Length: 170
Figure: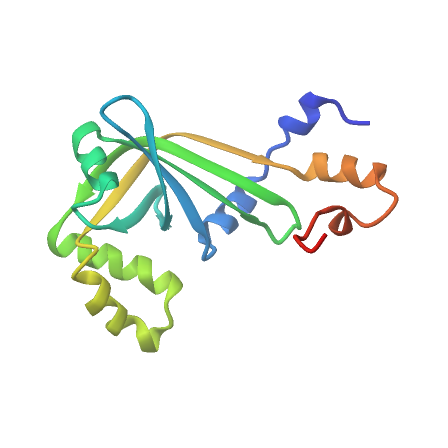
């Protein structure tokens, strides 16, 4: 039986982390409000050269918070090909990118998620709204996996793990 230290200190490999950050997932981004509270939002993201990017409109709270305080965090959760489920968090300095540079980064970000045949149309539609990019330069990375907890749980169940969860039909 694993103890809490083993369960909560199980870390993924750097290859698993890179694999998850390359996937078409949604990330939760946190920015700092003026009262010290955290503003959270879901975003599409791009990980490139150690930095995290997301697109947004210059009128959003996310963009305004980054402009005013220069800090953001991002959390991504997803499966690695090893079968392990990961959480990867980055926090650090952040800046708002504008103009042509923002449009170029946003195009690359969208290309991660959008079919090539639809990308130009998406760029035209979204480019009018999401006019900036936020770039996070992480100062701290955190990562963990729930694999040990999952394995320990499966040992205690009499049936399949997937069958233990309520579906809303009960």
